[in-house]
Length: 155
Image 1 (cartoon, one colour):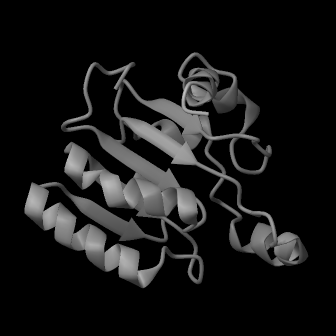
Image 2 (cartoon, rainbow, N blue to C red; image 1 turned 60 degrees about the horizontal axis):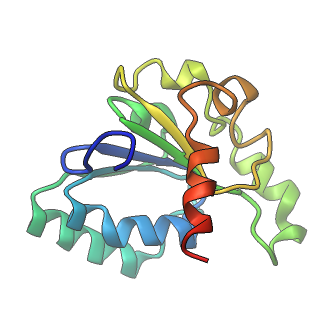
């Protein structure tokens, strides 16, 4: 909101694990007027109960929802590209399996080519290079450090 001046009508794309951070976005995006595009590998989709609620909210608030396994499809026309860790606390033993499953999900400039001309990138940190390459992470389009600063005020 700080960057775009408002949230209504923005398209947010999540690329990565169907985790708790994604669940929070799913529960709020439609209520804020944002379209949501989600790309997760098979077997790493968001919780089905959350998905059902999100579909209901999307219809109720007139927003679009896309769930896919293709990160390039999800990135198409996105204003905001978002990812998070692929290996959360307690999942360390799954690291090899997860890294294999998430091949092709790294956010890169190539992936962002089909995004909206004003696209930005968010990540709640800490970031691992396999999740987003340096070119995107350190680019002027990356708002990760402003995002981190904004979180300070909620602590």
